[in-house]
Each structure stands twice: as C-alpha cells, then as structure tokens.
Image (tube, rainbow, N blue to C red):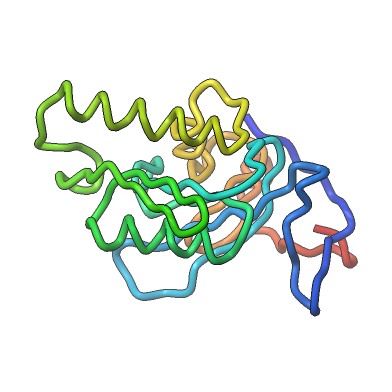
Length: 175
C-alpha cells in the first residue's frame, strides 16, 4: 500500500531533485517493449542515502522500475537491466552489479544456489545504501502494480488506484 502526499518540489536549476533529508527519491518506469520516454515520479520511505536499484520484476507488466538518489545512477541501473535483457541491479557511483534474469526478465536459468547467493548480495548492498525495507526489490516490484492503492507509477504515468485514473505529478506547484 502506498499513500498520497503533496509537498513543495525541491528544485535545482529548474529541475525537480531528490530530497534526502525527507527521504524523497526519484522513481522511474521504463517500458521494456516499446521505445517510449520513461515515466518519472517521486517516492518516499525507500531509505536510500546513495545509489540506485532497479528491476525488471515489476508487477503486472514487468517493465523496468528503478529508484535512486541521482539521475546518473538511476540511468546506470536501468541501462544495466536493458543490457542484460532483464534482471535486478544495484548501482553506487561507478559500481554496477546485476543478477541477470534471462527468462523473460523474470527468472534465471542459472543454478538456484548461485542465483540465491547473488540476490542476497544485491539485497545486502541495497540495505548498505540506506534502505531499511525488509525486501527492497520486492517493494520496488510493487511500485508499478496499478491495482494496489493509492498511487503507483506505470510506463504511462502516475496512477491513482482509488480514482482508477492517471493523474498529474504536479498540482499547483506541489509534487
């Protein structure tokens, strides 16, 4: 479950930025099936203090969903998923690591023990980046599931599950 919260946008050089003090980060959904612009919004309580995480396990359409502290790291995480044709990724500065999910971007055909080990490494890294969530990648996967209230992000924009319609990110200068 997510909630809706309107706050003044943190701006830098005319662009919306993250607010680490309030734990407000950028989140994006990138369509895996068509070459379209990404959807971008803001999310609170992911806890990342640095870096970015991304995944192609993103219910229901399994586009790429990413959250992070800088545009550069978010882009690096998304591009790592694209390069591997699916997976989960963690980025911190110039360091990038990926668990490839070669079966439809959802599953691995690798050894189960090795996949579990790599997943645990990436999960631990996400937590070292500051996430206090029990399961950061599982939480990320549900940020694009439109049928769970209140707000979710799809490749087509911000969606209000209570009104069952897309809504603008900005309302009277607030995000």
